[in-house]
Amino acid sequence: SQELEQSPQSLIVQEGKNLTINCTSSKTLYGLYWYKQKYGEGLIFLMMLQKGGEEKSHEKITAKLDEKKQQSSLHITASQPSHAGIYLCGADGTGTASKLTFGTGTRLQVTL
Amino acid sequence: DVKVTQSSRYLVKRTGEKVFLECVQDMDHENMFWYRQDPGLGLRLIYFSYDVKMKEKGDIPEGYSVSREKKERFSLILESASTNQTSMYLCASGLGGSNQPQHFGDGTRLSIL
Image (tube, rainbow over all chains, first blue to last red; front, side, top):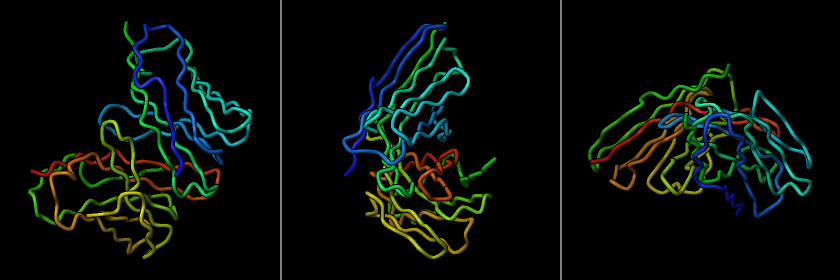
C-alpha cells in the first residue's frame, strides 16, 4: 500500500518568514493533492500536481512535484497568521482519485 | 463552490448505540467518501461510494456500514458504537478521475461514552 511521510510534523515560524513542508511517497504518484485544515474543521483544497517537475502557485503558496513524482514540497513565502493550521498531502496511487492516501500532516504555527 | 454538508459538528453517544452520520453534497459528484481522523494516524478511509447503491470498503471498514440511496447523500452507520470509535469523521465528495480533487465537509467530532 502507498505510504506518505510528511516533514516536519510541526513548525513554528515568525510572521514574515518563509517555510517549506515536504511530502514523500513510497511509490510513484498519479497525483498529489495539498490540503489545509484549520483546527477542528474540514480540509480545504489548495492545489493538485500531476506531472513530474510541475509547479503551481496560489497567492504566497507554491507547490512542486519532483521529476520522479515521489516527492512534493509546499513553500510559503512571507508567512502570515492566516497560514496557521495543519497541512496535509494526499496521494492518488491509482489514477482515479477514488482512493487517496494522506500523510499525517504538518502543524504550522505563525507567531507575531 | 462545492458544498459538502455534514449533519452535526459535535455528537455525543453511548456505547452500544446505533449512530448515523449524514453527509450531503450539492455538486452532483459521483464519488463520496467517509474518513476518520485521529492524532498521529492521519486520515483513514472507512468506505467510499462511486455510484448510488454502490459501496466499497476502505482501509478500516470494521464496525461501520454505509448507505447511499440518493446521489447527493452518503450515510455512515456505526452499528453498535464503541469507545474506540471516538474520533473526527470527515465526509468528502469528488467527480473521480485523475485530475479531480476531493472536497470535504467541516467534520463531525463524535464522542462515544
